[in-house]
Each structure stands twice: as C-alpha cells, then as structure tokens.
Image 1 (cartoon, rainbow, N blue to C red):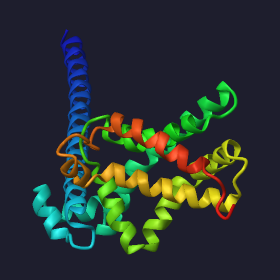
Image 2: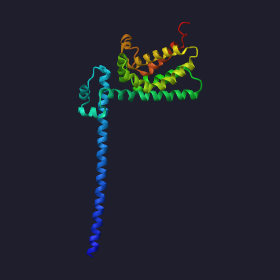
Image 3: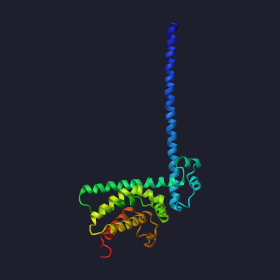
Image 4: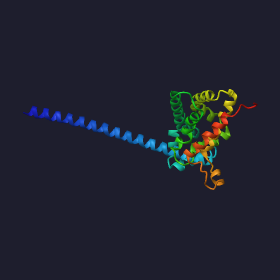
Length: 246
C-alpha cells in the first residue's frame, strides 16, 4: 500500500513539474511578445518623430538629441534600432518609397493587360501612388515629399543611391511606356519631360500653400483627387507637344 501511495505521489510530482514548465514557457513567450511589441512601438515613435522634424526643419538641421527629445525615448533606443541619423533617414525613405514603386508596377501591369497604352492612364498609374495614396487620399501635406524636396537641394549621393535602388526598375518601366505612347519623341525628349514630371509630382505632394493664398482659397492643392484631375491633362499636353527644335 505504501508503495502505491509513493508511486502515486511521484506521478503527481512529475505532473506538477510538467505543468510548471509549461506555464514557465508561456510566461517567457508572453514576456518576449511584450518586449517585441514595446520595441516596435519605440521604433515607430522614433521614426514618426524624425519624419516630422526632417520635414519641418530639414535633415541637416536636425540632430539626434532633438529626435530623442521629440520621441520621448532613451538615447540608447535610437542607436539600438537604427545606429545613426543617416540610417534612420534611409529607413524613412524606404518605408515610403517602396510601396509607391510597387503600386506603380501593379497599375502599369493592369493597363498592359487592358490593351494599347493611353498616355493619360499611364500618367495616372505613375502619379496616383505618390500624389494620392501616399497621403491615403487625405487633404494633408506629405512629410515624405517635404523631406525629398529638402534633400534634392543638397543632392546627397547616398540619397540618390536609395532612390535609384527603389525607383529605377519602375522608372524604366514607365519610360518604356511613355515611349510607346509618344512615338514622335526622341528618347532625349522623353527623359527631359520625365524629369519635369517628377518635379511637378514632388511639388504637388509637398504643396507650400502659395496657390491657395493667391486664389483666396479657390484652388487647394492639398486635395489629392482634385490635384490629379488638373495635373494629368496638363502634363499629358506638355508631353504630347512637338519635339524640341521642330
């Protein structure tokens, strides 16, 4: 009888240890999840703070201390998640640029499946992801555009390398599409007009409010749908114009 009791007690003890071990694993998993979530939240706060400051004051004028203060985090968190201010900038640029480039390619592929390309539709496929969807269709300024506009003045090689990495494939695909739509133009003409298209796009995304002031509120370029309605025919007319020198 004693042996039976001892055996029963041993079984119960093993069972308890198994339950304790399982609970311990669950607790560790929960702690890991919380830490991961906290880390993601911290990274997001740093990114959003840096994006606001870069857009408002320019990349060169903003220091890591200012970003840390704006984000309300410890300095170690910035170095842990990003390592440097430049790496933080690259993260911000990638997070905005990659969805734009990807969506452009999706739209262009859809147009090719429909049949012969139409210039206005190709322009919308190129512009909509940047002018409309990057702002989620809301009447607000694009901080990403403000940052790009500021960086374009300084012509930083590292920033150009990022833009080339993210946008080159989609840009070449659209240049090919423009050539199909505009057979009367030379490649040189198309490259120039594509450059002007990029300038208009960034200006429309950033929008300094000047036109709103001049028109006393009649024209508000912060509304992305209205901007596209005016931009597309305007750019199409310019791109269709006669070759330079003829």
